[in-house]
Length: 332
Image (tube, rainbow, N blue to C red):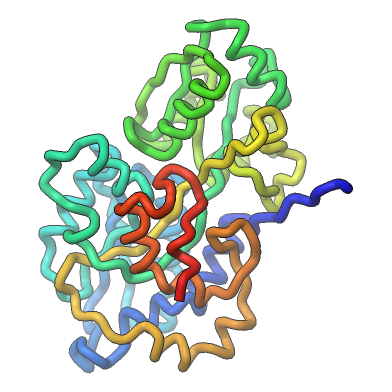
């Protein structure tokens, strides 16, 4: 019997749904522990990657929707470098008053494993506020690359060790480690070229400066549809809404499944109210909204609000930090 792959909503549609009733507004504006007037000034949402990438795109969609419910602007600020660690260090040291938040991803947890001596600890320096979504990743190439399908792509890597290079948003990102997993699975050798973000990778792939890029679907979908580059494969196993013709890498490598998770984080010590109480107050709305959860299927947005367990689960190794199998996120 043929197995039908589930479909991930297009990142823009998913983020718009999430921004509306995810519970982020409730988590920020709940009156339990925070000042009754919160927020009474704009909120900064810090992004550790350049504008135009997947994390930045989600942050900007949230910033456009949240003022309607918070009554204050949410200003996106890009502080790039060190695979998001510059932004993370800035947010960790910011006043724990709810006015400086970070849009972080799985790479922050990976960084602690790769660089044990970094000043921040992702599990103790931050408090998880809300989960946004699992971000689909694409492998993209120039139109003259000698492969159009996952199987052809894998065959090219195996047959041409050292011939190609691949670009990602930095050392230790899910994009980087995901492609290293691909190399390990195929026994191939491809040189890694770290960039500051997808906004720089996509033009260089189109222009031929680098033959392969690993970027978020958000960053490359428009150029793929316009025929400016080729989306060879998705790194996760699910279909992508609006990109159903893009096959998953799992078609050539069964079981291959990689995608980062994106979170909204606050500095440790930021006052926190009971999440479950707010979820109960928004239960009807949340049950009507559907989005992608960590198990690879549609689920209530309420399931993404219990991100404390997911964040801690990542750090303990309870769920793979580089893949989307985050079992802890579905508890409670």
